[in-house]
Image (cartoon, rainbow, N blue to C red; front, side, top):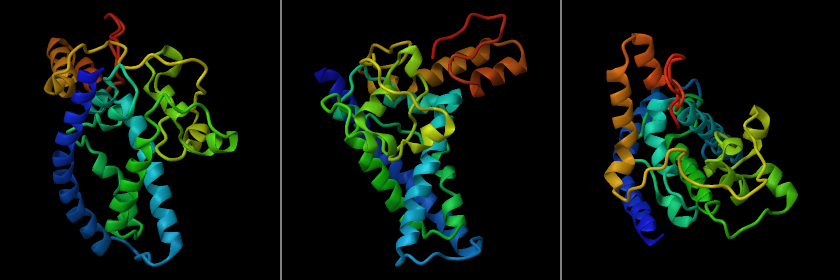
Length: 248
């Protein structure tokens, strides 16, 4: 477990620097959208602007998170966070290095007049909230809280590799999105964590890149263009009907 934790922490440290570059680029883009394309500018001093920013970021996080589990090329980045066979606070730090288009998901907010700095502040709040849900030490909480918010129980399900838990509970702060859009699953038994095809390595470079390598191999081997596109943009585990089904 110690080597796994160190791998998670190391991936998180590298992510701090790579994420800073992406966010700096996004800041300039959001500022231009906010200044020249937004039909109005919401006042940062009003409480409702914060509500729009926080709830908007959470909804867009849900949307991106769901896409990241259903489009293999984006999953290739996100899978790094799911690659640990343990579930603890160190796992929360096991973050991706490549943005994979996530910064594009927040464009609707500056376009609706939310100040760019509030978009980033709201995303930081969202990310910080998600840290504490990465634990097995906290059981199910008060039922009304469990109904509205993402909790350790909900997020354990999300990290489970068990068939009934796959691609469930995408919410960041609110679990309401999963209930609303049909992706919710309750924790019925202790999940088994990691990928359905485990990557037994602590090499952080391999943990970040192995799925890209697999995509490249599958695309090169495919004979038809539709199959090449399917291997890259289909869901993880996609394969032509006349080929063996790959594991996610």
